[in-house]
Length: 264
Ligand SMILES: C[S@@+](CC[C@H](N)C(=O)[O-])C[C@H]1O[C@@H](n2cnc3c(N)ncnc32)[C@H](O)[C@@H]1O
Image 1 (cartoon, helix red, strand yellow):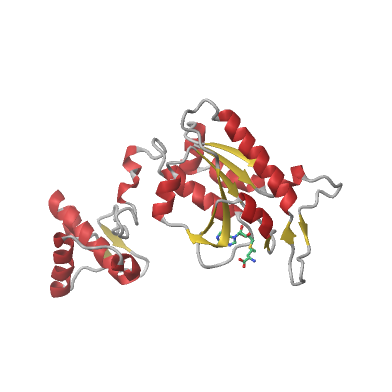
Image 2 (cartoon, protein in one colour):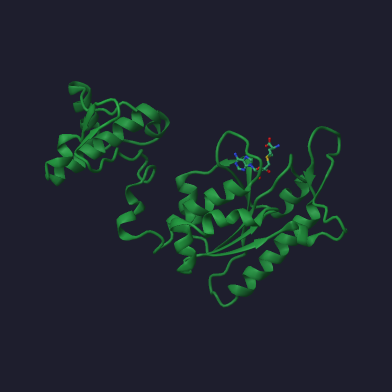
């Protein structure tokens, strides 16, 4: 998959190109990244990319022209690379913005089917709306809060998409049991030691079921924990998801017995 990212701070992207799963996936050519700095598309000596807002008010607004030129250049490059691809369709341009649609697992899965994407990571108070109206296909937000720039949101989107690309995760890292995949939060995990004595002297045990070797029971317990966690922390997810008979029974069993639910 090809990502082109337009950003005033391209060096920030080393956070994903140099580390962990996304770093390894880049080395293994599972995705390619080309960074474009809008300052390289300015024509004045100061390399100006922003100006004061019409109508007044605080902050600066990003100029349409350097961004338009950067988008056109990255589209042309992607077209050149993919020209022999039979199913080449024009690139999708995504602006990361708090005013965009919330980025969800479903959207990430859709994006992971694309051959190429252009991500627009902007700064300041915002971007000249005429650029957004004419060249941006989608706007996505990574949450109901405001960051100083679109680089972290662009990296969050890339990381989430790259994890879904074939070969990005080792077998043991399989993403199929992650939160949101089937509309539930992930279950709690435990590792050695079997009894963890914390600094206050408490002896904290691993739930006995996980030590039982009974894989069917362990699977059932994990599903029950996922259901309970989702009900407690994200009831909005359960509200839009129907329960299987087994899932409804696992919740009902817990409500009868009322044990084993993790505290946080
Ligand atoms: C300081 S913010 C601009 C906020 C804008 N004035 C608003 O209130 O919607 C600068 C840039 O950071 C990025 N950004 C900030 N928060 C974001 C979020 N929650 N999701 C996606 N992008 C975000 C966007 O690219 C935005 O253009």
